[in-house]
Amino acid sequence: MGNKCIILLSELNFKTKLNMQLEKIFHSFGLSASLAELVTVLLVMLAIAVIFWLAVGKKRLHNSVMNIYLSFALVQVLPIDLIGTSKNLPVLIFLILLVLLTLIGRYTFDIGLSGSGLAYWQIFLMSFFEVGAIFSVVATFLGDKQLLQYVSKDALFYFTSPWAKFSWLTLPLLFLIYINKSND
Image 1 (tube, rainbow, N blue to C red):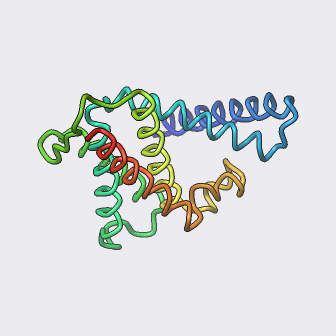
Image 2: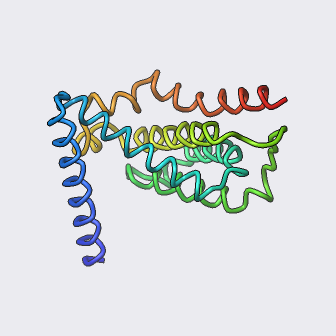
């Protein structure tokens, strides 16, 4: 257990150093520290969105929208005695449910898109919205106090403010509706 903690702490330290280096680079371009951090967060989200798209696949990307909503809803109604006072357990349960629902996706929701398929920009934008929704849900479960150790209040605002949470959870669904209408 101790070795795993040391490995996780060293990985976190590496990621923090990497973020600090990226922020320094953007700051050297004349961006303010706050804007440099936002650009770094955006680039990290874009990279994760591409990884998410490649991991899930473009044919099941629309199913993962439902998986995010369902995982979030299930964690919200978990009995408090199951979770206790842990801030990390809801995040872990949410991510486990999300992975499980994605793995068994062909047996649960088989939502098909009409038309010849999605354009790459649609796939990329959909995966970006889904990653934003996942970030927002995880940030909501962890809370501002814990996350302020890693990001500024300004960057956190874009994921945890009431309108941001609403937007991140609504955008994937609205974009899915748009895609279905435009492919008809």
